[in-house]
Image 1 (cartoon, helix red, strand yellow):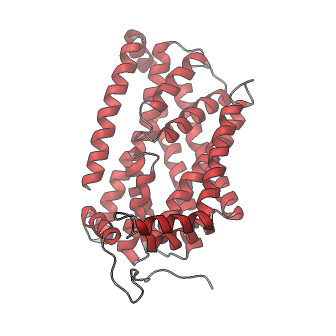
Image 2 (image 1 turned 135 degrees about the vertical axis):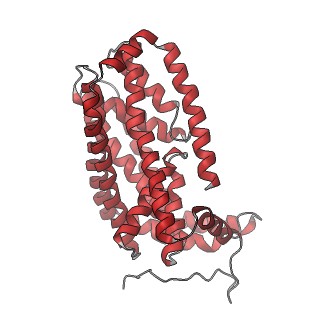
Image 3 (image 1 turned 180 degrees about the vertical axis):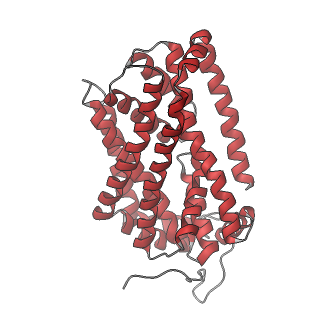
Length: 346
């Protein structure tokens, strides 16, 4: 829980600084006027579409767990997934590995077995968003090259996580390093699960789910533009949001804060040809409806997980940390991990 608080404080502080800069650089009078003319009746629809996108991503998460043979009650699994959204403000959303910690507490499935599902989520978030970005790029004579670079990075990431040779090399390296040698026994299981989830068919299925889920969120973003009374083609909005989101994710800044906002303001001003005030107001609304709404849902999820698992969130995180730092001794020197709740496929 302390790490979550630190992430939130850091993200909030960074956001305040970024939004102050945007407000100062924008025409403050026009910024206030833009907020005043926004059709706030669309706000529940926008948030509803964003929430539905999270439901789609939950189906992807459940699909991954089924592939791994990890079973959880539906309500408990949904709460754990929602809790992971609290880590939207972590670098690249990789803090969502917290979900694996909660699964370990709930049914004994080792973190090394389920953490690859979080990695696979990030990869297919990328492939789904790149697909939308390429559609948006059809509107322009530029931008496709940048999106193809993002796609090459995603392909490289998949190849890296599936590489057995690299996994063995990392295991040898970790065994020789004082602080990382305790993680070495878990790398084989991590690689096996990664290889399973990032195989061609699961990758295609998850990318389709991701594409549909992102489509709902993008529709919510488009309604932000409509609610502001701005006439802008849907595919232009798609391109602006896709490139800004991908840039924020690859920056590894917590929540992409600063990078995503700069992308939104810059492209709404240049590609969308909006004034500084309108571009700034839209950026505020879009980030509230996506980044900060997700964080709020995640905090509610954390409370539900605490109630479901019956342990304070902090204790679960502490146990995961101690698991990585102090493996139990077995006959072969590796950690013996309970397997309750993990149904292996024949």
